[in-house]
Image (cartoon, rainbow, N blue to C red; front, side):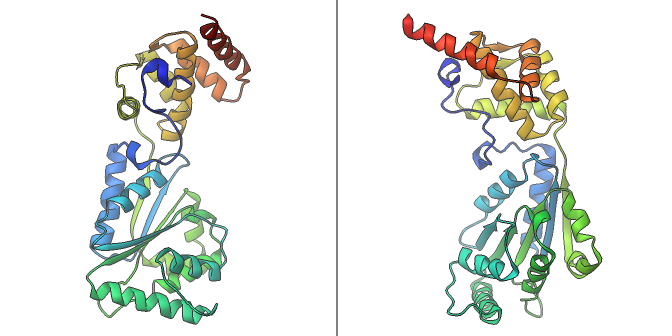
Length: 288
């Protein structure tokens, strides 16, 4: 709604995990380096955790997109509502494999043959399980069994388990101790600090097509950071609302009071007053 007013080609603060908009804060660079290290060294299991909205999925999609397609085969599974059998079928399906029966034995044999073939071709195979904190115990155990597909010297499959902090307590359960012991690379993604949050906002507006068409004042930045705590998804939500408020007031600088209003509205209070303002302005523009 406000893109034309500010000159953006697209909305800068959508909450979809678009890798093109990934901002590499110091935390995100470190997390990315851990992922690359694990794959390059065939570490086997990797654990990536972080609070809701810290950018784990966006980072994972960027990581998978940037892997050399000639040297890697990748799969991303983000449906936690799977049985152990459905998991096996999903993994094989993501790698483009074909099987004849529904037996776990054949599914594992087909997957093992594929992994050996990729190993001989010099390729690494990477499986990413997103939202892993919601996976049932039996599915996590099946993932451990999949990791047993290996040679005497190498892991044939690199598995990334990504999830919210609850994943740590899930993996700490006694019945999953064998899986937990196999995780050799771990990283917990923290929210951004204040300076990184400012850079993040500028970064997204620049990528959206018009860096200086809108500007967030220092007081506005402080309100946004205080509300979001540096969590990218919350930054997006409140910045999107602040730009909408700026649009209704025909202002290119987002002031502290505008940001405070945005925080109030996205924090749970009714947005209908703002919607009415937008409609009045659009109606007035049509009449002119």
